[in-house]
Length: 221
Image 1 (tube, rainbow, N blue to C red):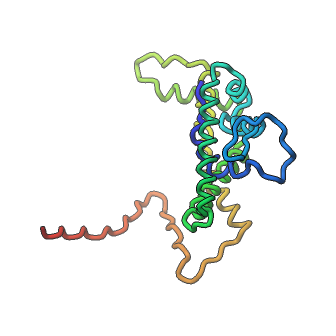
Image 2: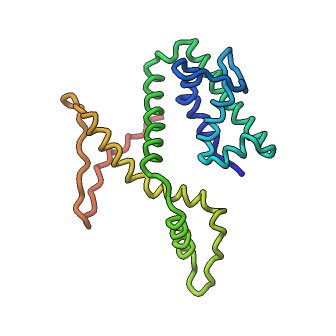
Image 3: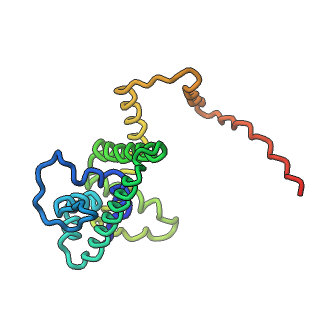
C-alpha cells in the first residue's frame, strides 16, 4: 500500500513544521522519535503528521505500527527531519525576513488553508454515490458490440473514486470559498490597480481572442 506522503512532507516543511515545538500547547511527554539541533519531534506530533498524510485512520495505523511499512514510515520521518534542518538553517540566516520568502510562504499557507477548507466543506461521499460513479465510469469505457469491462472490487478502487469525487467538486468549491472570503474581508484597490472583470460571453458566442503582439525581428548576426 502506498500513501502520498511526499507532498505533505514538503508542506510540513513550509507550514506544519512551524507549529512543532509551539509553547502554547499542553506539554507533550511522548517518545522523542527524532531531534534536529535541539528541536524535538515527538511520537504524538509524528502520529498527527502521518494521519494527515494518510488521510485515513486505518492507513495511518498500518504505517505507524505495521512492520511491512517500517521503511516508508522511516523515510517520511527522514523527510520531516530534513525539512526541519533546512528551516533552522534558513532562519539562522534571517531568510524569514526576506520579502520574497515571506511572499512565497504566504502563498503556500493560503493554498494549505484553501485545501483544508475544501475538504471540510466537501465532506465525505456515501458508498452509494461512489458506486454510482463507478458504474458510470465502467459504462463510459464500454465499446459497442463488445462485452462490458469487468467491474473491479468496490473496496479496491474506493480511494481513487473518493479522489475523483473530490476533483468534481473542487472548482465549484474554490469559486464559492473565494467569494465568501472576500465578502468577509472586503477588498479595496488603489486607483489603477483594480483588475478588469472577466467578460461574460453570451451562451453560444465564441469569445474573441486578444490580439497577439507581432514577433520580434531576428537579430542580425
